[in-house]
Length: 156
Image (cartoon, rainbow, N blue to C red; front, side):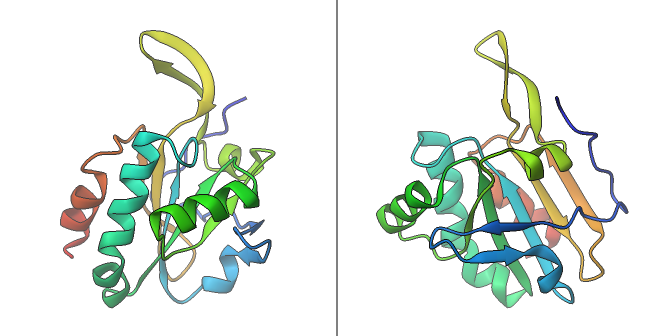
């Protein structure tokens, strides 16, 4: 079931996942720079599209501030490729089909949706420092306005 929630200062669980083209991306290979990792439930759904497009539109300023962005969902690479093409996404989308990384980050488990409890992806965002430690952890974020809030809190 749901993994333990990560706290600021925790070492970010390392992972290697396939991107939309089937290439492997490993978190520890990005050491030395700050990385925003965001977990979203499903490509091409309204909330996830809003969030992805906000990251797309903010990528230049995030990159200028030394931040890379990785989006992770349970979708397979083919669906991620379709999502990337449809929305012109300019950062890696990674496939976590068995939920192992989602669970390692505490981003999979029970959540409330429309007044009902269900099990699934908990929309969550993490900022990982150059040392591989969690600088910020947000659970249960709203898709709309989240990137603007993140930029404000990071001073970008």
